[in-house]
Image 1: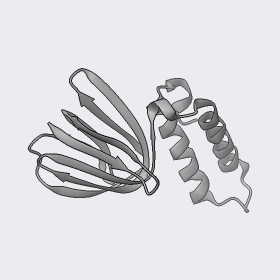
Image 2 (image 1 turned 180 degrees about the horizontal axis):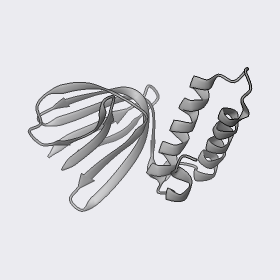
Image 3 (image 1 turned 60 degrees about the vertical axis):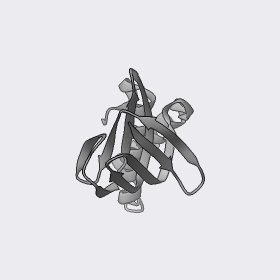
Image 4 (image 1 turned 45 degrees about the vertical axis):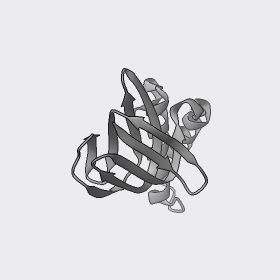
Length: 137
């Protein structure tokens, strides 16, 4: 078993023993099982998926760091939200707003910020299980 902890500056979201964790590292997704070699990684926008027995849970994250040890995974995320807490309608609206900004061609648009907002909205929708809205246009 692996002790998984997921925290943000505001709160602790996960603090439990799990069998497996999959994380969105800066170089791509990677899985962790008990006995994994120690490592540190930056996190990108994406979803953390963890399994305890046959039960799987998800958390949407945006940026931060993860420390992996043979018996624990500690996630320090800038932003994190459990799948069951995601407001799907709000995430859909955020996705639509971001897509509109990116399509507008307006020179006043902060392109990096709009792209990051789109990436976060798509990730939240994917983690929440809203597959139809989670696709990029």
